[in-house]
Length: 109
Image 1 (cartoon, rainbow, N blue to C red):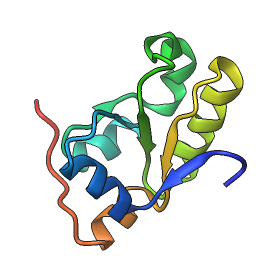
Image 2: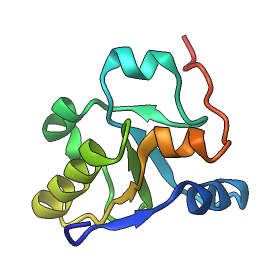
Image 3: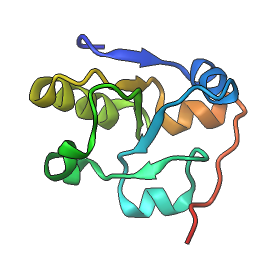
């Protein structure tokens, strides 16, 4: 989508299961985040991304997700345009993850 890298739920599951080193970032709202996450994800809402993009390193593999993949695609484009970082979008978002039969967990308090 729009010149960004994407993976689907099964590809992300394989990456996580193999122990591949990656940074998984949830860009949804606080309320959405509290409903459940992909295990190991960190919370960074989309509206905060411009303030914290310096926290991303160009040599790390970053996978962003949201509810359906639209906001995380925007976040990927924003990172690419402003930092040159090629983050990866989870196509279908957490909905696609769940519909593929993969687990969603409650975030740590």
